[in-house]
Image (cartoon, rainbow, N blue to C red; front, side, top):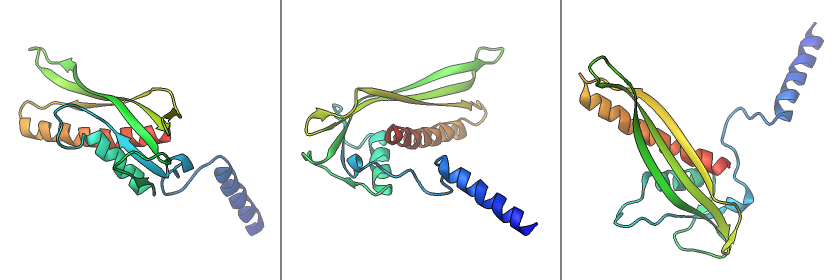
Length: 161
């Protein structure tokens, strides 16, 4: 009986590892992203855009060296466009919004030594949330928290691509 259980356990674990399943940790970065620079230029911006900061943090978390200046040996992740939108999903009988949808979309490409590695790619992340008119400050705080989570998720999706 114990032999059958051990055999079934090893078969199960072997099947999981064969399909690429990982119990913990993050997806390792490809070697092309071990040295990377994130570029995004937007007029009149003093601080990093949240998506750029999230992408840099995720690169560092996964073990990459992030560079501040262009380098011929580094991969440049150039963010071409970031759009944020907020749409009304549902309204009450008085025409007031009950639910909103937040969408963050980024267009980007990767280059190395001014040679394209990828075409222009586009990724988006969407979240819905219920708006409570009785707790406006709480609703605004929830929206800000969702935006932060969306930036992190979008950075992860961009690196996976």
